[in-house]
Length: 185
Image (tube, rainbow, N blue to C red; front, side, top):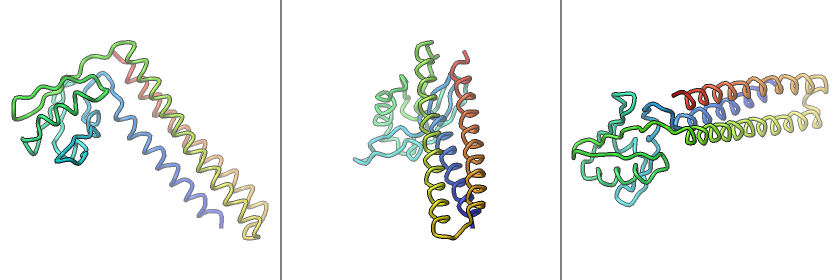
């Protein structure tokens, strides 16, 4: 009776970890990564549209991104959107493709990104703990309604705590790896 609750909790926690991992890919490191500008919103005929839907993004060199725009009339709008972002990028265009050189990070900027990584890691931990709280409440309700015995409830709660700890360890490992990437010169 408690196994479906635990599977549901693990699934929700895994989704939180995956979301965190996706968020980390948008944080800049010293080298070029297409995910860095994937989510830049470009006004496409009046509708904010993610850049990855308007162009193909590649990283042919460690310090350069190349954006091949599908609709050439939007090159100016895409350049403007890339410049206005908080990444500190200065794209240039030859009318066919947009080249985005990735400048090296300053020490101060690296520290800001590490703080951002830690903030996003804490948000992920909070999301995981919220899932744990909700699922523990479900287990308690099942016990009160007589659907599960008290012993099963306690075992389920202990297993839920172990699942929570393993998911938080995954978040911590991802955060540590990203911090190392950011601080790497």
